[in-house]
Length: 360
Image (tube, rainbow, N blue to C red; front, side):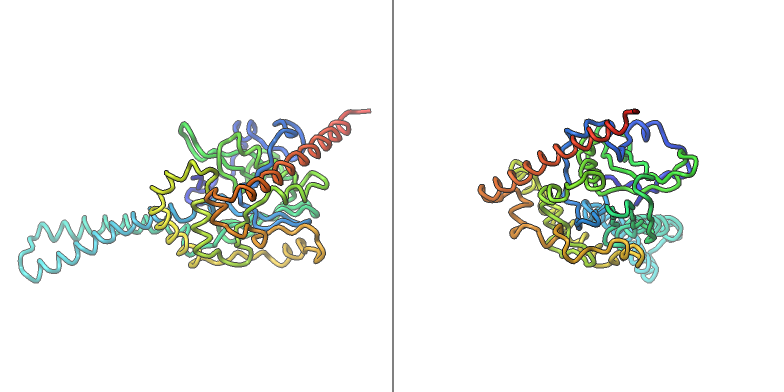
C-alpha cells in the first residue's frame, strides 16, 4: 500500500533527488525499451475518449482495508476510556474508589486512551468524509494534465512540463512504487508540487503502466488499441461506486490459483468492504472546474468511448478469474492483438523521433 501524499505529505520545496532523476519516466521515446513495453491499464481507467483519459488515484484501489484497521485502532482506546469512566463513576458512588485510582483514571488512563482514539480518528478522517477519489485527467488535444488534489483543489499543467518519475513508498526489501508527477520551479530543479497516478506496484512493472499513459498522449492512431486493452473501469464518473462493485474491486485476482488464499481472506475483505462503503458514502464526488470541463468537451460523435458502461456483463466472473473458456480466449486475443499493434505504432513513432533528432 502506497499512501505517500495522503497520510504523509509529499516532500516539497526540495531539489530533485538522485532517485527522481535515475527513475525518470520520459514523455518522449527515449530510454526504457519503449517499443517492448507492455501497455497495462491496471483497471484504473475511469473514462477514455479521443479528448481525454481519466484515471483514479493510487489510494482508490486499497480503500477500505486501511480504514478498517484504523477504525479498530480508534475504537479500542475509545472503548477503554468509556469503560474506565463508567467503572470510576460506579466506584465513586459505591464509595469503593481510592484516591490513587481516581487520580490515575483522571490524569492517565482516560487522557491517554482518548488521545490514542483521537489520533487514530485523524488518520481515519483522511479517508472518510473527504472525496470518493482524486482523479487525474490527461487531455490529448490541449496537451494538459489536470489533477484533483487531496485538499480538494485542482492543478492544471502542460503535459511536457511535468517531471514524471517512479517514487518509492518507503524502505524495505519489497517496497511499493508509484508514478509521481513533480511540478518544478523555473529553475527546473526545485519540486514545488507533486501528485501520483493510480498505479502502485513494483518499479519495473510501472514502465508498462507508463507505456499506457504515454501512448495515449504521444502515439498517433492508438486509441482503439488502448480501448481493446481496457476491460474493467471503476464506475465513479460523477457518482459513487456501489457497495457491490467496491467489494468486487477489492477481491479482483489474476488467476484461480489465488482462490484458496482468497477463501481464507474473504471474511476480512467483507469487513473492509463495509469500511470502503462508509468511506464512499460519507465522501463528496469530485467536480472539475468549468474551465477544465470546457477544455475537455467531448465530440458527441466520438468513435472512442470507454467507461464503466463497457464493463463485462458478469463482473464477478472477471474479478475472480472465472470466465468461461471461450470468453477468456476472446479477451486474451483481443488484448494481445491490441498490444502487438500498439508496439508496432510505438516502434514507428520511435524511429520517427530518432530521424527528427539526427541533425542534417
